[in-house]
Structure formats: C-alpha cells, structure tokens
Amino acid sequence: MLIELSAKDYVRKVATDDPTPGGGSVAALVGSLGGALTNMVGSLTIDKKAYEQVPENERVVMEEAFTKIEEITEELILIVDEDSTAFDDVMNAFKLPKETEEEKKIRSEAIQAGYKKAMEVPLKCAEKCLDILKLQDVFANYGNVNAITDVGVGTLLAYSGLEGALFNVIINLKSIKDDQFKEIINKRIEELMKEGKQIKEDMLEIVYRRLS
Amino acid sequence: MLIELSAKDYVRKVATDDPTPGGGSVAALVGSLGGALTNMVGSLTIDKKAYEQVPENERVVMEEAFTKIEEITEELILIVDEDSTAFDDVMNAFKLPKETEEEKKIRSEAIQAGYKKAMEVPLKCAEKCLDILKLQDVFANYGNVNAITDVGVGTLLAYSGLEGALFNVIINLKSIKDDQFKEIINKRIEELMKEGKQIKEDMLEIVYRRLS
Image (cartoon, rainbow over all chains, first blue to last red; front, side, top):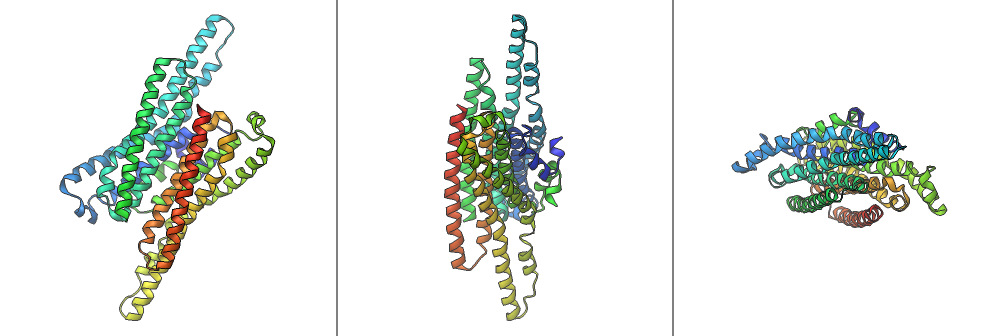
C-alpha cells in the first residue's frame, strides 16, 4: 500500500513515470495533512493551559470538530490508495473485445461506467477536504495562539487537496458523454470551488489577524 | 527520522500534541510533493511519445528544469526533519541561568540568536518552493497533456509549501528584537509571497486552459 511507504519513498515514487501515485492520491494525502495539522492545534488547546481562553460554549464545538476531523483525516488516508485503483475499471474496459457492433456497444458502455466510477473517488476527496475547511473556524478563532500558524498551513492544505482533487474530477469528466450527468457534476465542482475558496480566505484572514 | 516514517504514521504524528512535526515540517513535505508531481509530468513527457509535441528549443529547458526540480525536491525532503530541530537552540537558550545581570544578557542574546537560526529553516523552505514554481512553466506549457492536471496540483502544493513556510518565518520573527534584521526579512517575505502568488496564478491559468 502506498500509504505504508515511508514519506520519502512516497515522494520519490510520485516523481517517476508510473502514473500512480499521481495528483489524485497526493491531493488526498495533502488533505489528510491539513486535517492533521488542524487537530494538532486542537491537541495543543483542549485540556491544555490554552483551553482557559476558549469560551465555554466554544469548547463543545471544538471537541466535536476535533472528533469529526479525526474521522475525515482517516478517510482521506484511505483515498491515498483508493485513488490509484479508481482507474482500473476504465483500463479493463478498454481491453474488452471490439469486433462486432454488440461488443463495441458493451465496451463503450463499460468505459463510460468506468470513467464515472473513477471520478467518484476524487469527488469524494474534494468533499472531505471541504468538510475539513468547514470545521476549521473554531480552531482559527480559539485555537492555541502559539500554534495558530498551523491552522493556517492546515487551511492551505485542505484547500489544495480540494482544488487538486477537482482537477482530477474535471479531467475524467472530459471522457464522459452523458450530458445530464456532466451538468450535475459541473455544478457541484463550481459549488465546491466557490465555497472552498471563500472559507480558505476567511480562515487565512483570521490567522493573519491573530498572528499580527 | 520523520521522513522515514510511513506516510500514514507521519500524518497521525502531526495530529498529536507533540509540536513536531508541525506546519514547518509539513510545508517542506508538501513542497517536495509539488516538485515530485511536476517531475512526474516530466517523466511522462521526456523521451515519451508526448515529447514529439515539445518544440526542440523547449526540450533543453524541460530537461534542465527536471534536473533542478529533482535536486530541490531532495533538499525539501531534508527540511522535513531539519525543521523539527530548528527550534532546539531557542529551547536550550531558555534553559540558561538568569540569576545575574551578566547571565541575563548572555541568555537573552542566545535566545535571539536561536530565533534567527530557527527562522532560517522555513525561509529556506519558502525559497525552494518558489524555485519549483519558477521552473514549472515549461511543464505547464509543454508537458504531456494527459497529465496536465498533475502540474496543476504541483503548483498548488509548491505554493502551499511557500506560504506555509512563510507562516513559520512570520511567527518566529515576532520574537526577534533586531529591527534592521526584521525589516530585511519582512521585505523578503513580501517579495516571496508576491512572486509566488503571481506564478501560481499564471500556472493555474495555463493548466485550466490546456484542460478545457
């Protein structure tokens, strides 16, 4: 499994002409690092001296966000490997026979189904990265000020995981012929990008303000 | 060494209340992934079928950029661990005796020297990430179009490594009292951010154009 490789070997493997791990796998890893950094700030705040500065009603919010981010981070860790097999169905479909008209039709449908499935993995990755961004607010506002830059890096990474994953949705979508499906996905891509960018800017603004 | 941990264990270690690895180490890892993804596109272009589409005069540029990015990626890999010891001098300085005026003066000077040194590591990381961004142009314009999204993810990551590392420069700079030194570093931070942001936007524009 890719995620079991040492960080150094993973980086070096990315650079080779083996298409996996590629941008989709890396986006998931980077998103998971964004989650982990956010939770590091949580770990340095909850039940620590810095917790005294956190208003009572925000503590529940922070603890719940911590648990959710922990779950999402683990889910993103799984996508690091899942992404590299997402394309298998497309590759297998391309190998199907294409002699008769019937075979051509079956093959073409299998390819289309493969692309749709391949697209689901980076789309899931993008959704999870957005979920992390949505949960960062309480850490940006009330996290241990000595670790506030780590929320900032976490924001940059969750956002990069989001846009990076969407790149892979977009490139797979190009091969899909179902116009109605394409329209639905394109609309979701737009929403994810818009919401993600807005939260990223808001979070960074808070971090830079607390840093100054 | 952190970089020898499995990618999964590294992510999980980030999330703990141990301040290392923190945002500085992660920024270096993410920058190295940005370099590696860019070079994956190089690996899928140079001497491959896609190389036919690369103009003769751009091939030398691409091959040279490939070699340079390979070097920078390895340098960033080293920073993943270097960052976690960068703060050692500050921590040791804080442990110095502070009974007499003379001791106080020595301690204070040692702390200041420690902060300056601690700042050098993320500053170097930011410079290396900018170097990667500067070298991406030929891959964005002439890299294998089937892997063009990987240049896009590479750009997002090199930029996140840059801004992420600068967060750590800024937070350390707050503890430094030497105004002249602060002014020099603040000017460099501004330049790095401005140049990095501009290149990031230019690269993403090329990638989205080639993707459409």
